[in-house]
Length: 318
Ligand SMILES: Nc1ncnc2c1ncn2[C@@H]1O[C@H](COP(=O)(O)OP(=O)(O)OP(=O)(O)O)[C@@H](O)[C@H]1O
Image 1 (cartoon, rainbow, N blue to C red):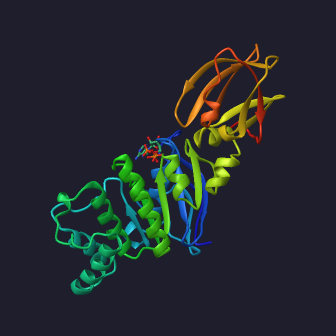
Image 2 (image 1 turned 45 degrees about the vertical axis):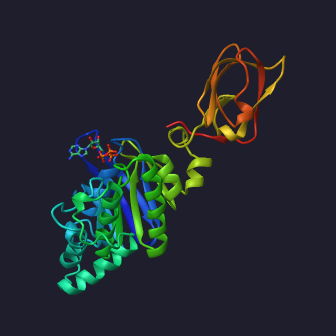
Image 3 (image 1 turned 120 degrees about the vertical axis):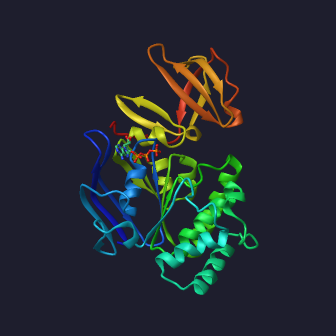
């Protein structure tokens, strides 16, 4: 295994921190740590980067524990949400700084390498621009070039797209994926945005309150969540009880069958665009049902229906 986090624990007090984190990362893999604010994503990333010291556990990179190494001795580079660039320096100075500092290259060689990475991130022609005069997306590219140019074995990315507007976020997401494919660099990416996680990752680590809830490929965590937390955090879901067991049913896997003798009555309806949220009642209990597609948006309140379920996944309650 390329990178292995073994029972990694860092508690700030009795409640807050991360507990017994176990994650395996293959070389060249894109792994996303996904979870709500405060779940321990940044803490996990900072433990790998060396900005925090673990209470216990191991961080094995190619079999060697780097838990006690200072950040600058770890073959790891971090792209921060705030970019952390030097505003008074121009693009090429920002990118070559890390090459001189970490790779100990002479100025001329560092400039040559910097130019290559500036080209890779699509900023050729901007070498002499002060970074303070660049747009958010361009600054993000400089930060990526600066980190990648240090030739790290692992690139850590802490919500790097969250300061960009919605359309630029999607564009940068595609560029990041292209860069990763091109350079085959191992990336560990932190986000609270499930669509970012689903679209970018080889593997997603879903966290909640300092614990890992599930690790799997995007399709595994979406189609086969092992517990209710993951089911409701990722994607739109229907949580339906059948004979005392809880099941996840995705909107695309459920339909209403109109039937004047049907078991359920539609009580409430909200059109949300991508899906329509209905509340149906069997006379005893209300169930929220989310249906996707235009053909499922036009059922009327008061109609009697049966539920038709094409696929369901049993859940554990955590
Ligand atoms: N230096 C610290 N001292 C005390 N508590 C901390 C410290 N850093 C983080 N915490 C707490 O530990 C928990 C995990 O924080 P962390 O920053 O890892 O969460 P996160 O998932 O990255 O959240 P966000 O998305 O908001 O950045 C939170 O409850 C946070 O308040």
